[in-house]
Amino acid sequence: TDFEVLAMNNLRRLLNPLGLYEIKKPRGRFILLFKENPEWPAIQNNITKVFGITSFSPAYRCELNIEDLKNSLHITLANQSFQTFGVEVKRPNKTFPLDSQAIKIQIGSFIVEKTQAKVNLKQPECWVEIEVMEDSIYYSYQRFEGPRGLPIPVSGKLMTLISGGIDSPVAAYQMMRRGCEMDFVHFHSSPFTNQASIEKVRKMVQLLQPYQGRAQLYLVPFASFQKQIVAHSPAPLRVVLYRRTMV
Image (cartoon, rainbow, N blue to C red):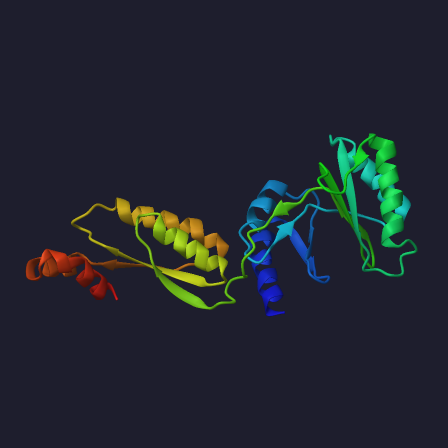
């Protein structure tokens, strides 16, 4: 779908510099393949900036047989500490000789034997998630929350007024989370005020920019308009007139 294409584009933009070389798209998920020794903290940080992602997990890949899966799991879980665990299996590859329940039983028994941990399918300390694909088996034991929302720019482009306060950047973030691509406009009173407010706005836009890849900031000198409004209108009307002039 268009949603998936946009999310994939945003993932590539943020993850290609970190070694991403391929994205596979089985139903309802993405499999991101990286070069050896990827920088996981940086990858994790960047994925949290891709709206439309519900959750994500660092996954391991092994050969398409149950014994290789057991060996790989034994190495991976050797340094993990947990008292309870659960196993979840998805099997898109229906030609694999074991069905999902049989895989759960074999892998669950294997983990009990190697770790002495107990099975808990309600609130385990460790969830082992296994997916049997056409050419490989993928498994993970950690899951992280994604930012959810809609991928940018599925909802189009907007212009937002941004000031030095907290309300406008939060509002911009919430609209970006709904799939809007944002540009920004800031009205400043320089030279009657110092450059600090402008620099603060620049930093806010820099913090928001990675979520969409680019962002244009328009800086509009407003001091001369303010002078005229103050000189020719009563105080109770000035804020309304400022806003009208900004529009």
